[in-house]
Figure 1 (cartoon, helix red, strand yellow):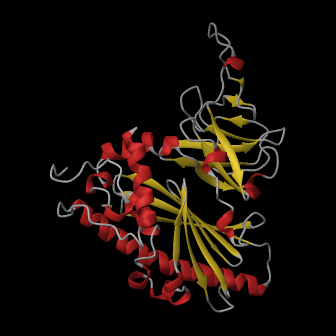
Figure 2 (spheres, helix red, strand yellow):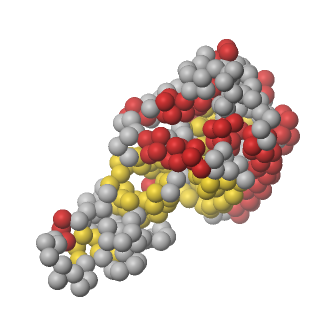
Figure 3 (cartoon, one colour):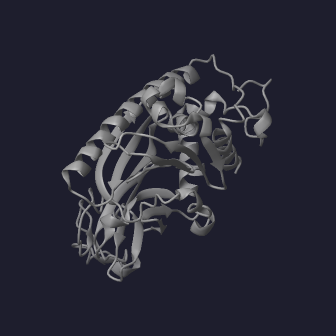
Length: 355
């Protein structure tokens, strides 16, 4: 890093803030730092309670290299485990499922109860001092907000502290009773933080998203930051065949979760690293339950419009990654009015890296 620049991890103030140094967006060492300092110490969105309605219902995911399974146990509790058998690291499940009675490793058949305790291990009778009930799956914390399910390791704050203030910006757009509709996955040739940075400000909207800009009121576009999240708000005007009129609220939940709330729709985005300069973005769509022709047409219009916005974001994020890798870039000044949420995010990252 350039020795003439300030300490890149020192706390900054918004009125004089610089963006993160390019080195934070490249290299395998930085990726490992993100896994240990950020992902292992944060709450991660894994899905919606509607996919976990009954005992044995489960979802599988991956959080920066850690396979995870979330399941509802026989007592009705949500449990989150490492999806890694204690024998030789095989998977307990390879896809989402319903009504599982047990968790059985796909590799050698070791079988666990829904409480995460090993129940049977084929042909292990001759192993001395081996007791199946002594073997347990490592467990993560799990909690919910407005129907959304989050998991975290021991390094994260309490969920109450983490989610403080989440309800206030909703403006009547609660997704609690929505149902899952469809998932789209996009692979983007940029560091995962580049994509998050881009999401965190409306500064680029008039320049990158002409269609979206026509629906939002940039003059009333407001961004607020709280402890572990920020949100962007604008009045919305659109055709009744898309969203109609109302509010648009965009949550960013540290470190990598986005909630896009529009009338009648929730879209969640999870940004997960695939490498130092690649990430995957999962888009999950949720709507109020309806199978009417009009509702289906609005869903398709929503998908088409979101694909257009996403294509625009992908293109600029990949350009930014090339710029960060070029050796030309030195940290630039942030716009205090329009990039306050970027500053807030960078300060949370700096604090995590300092630890």
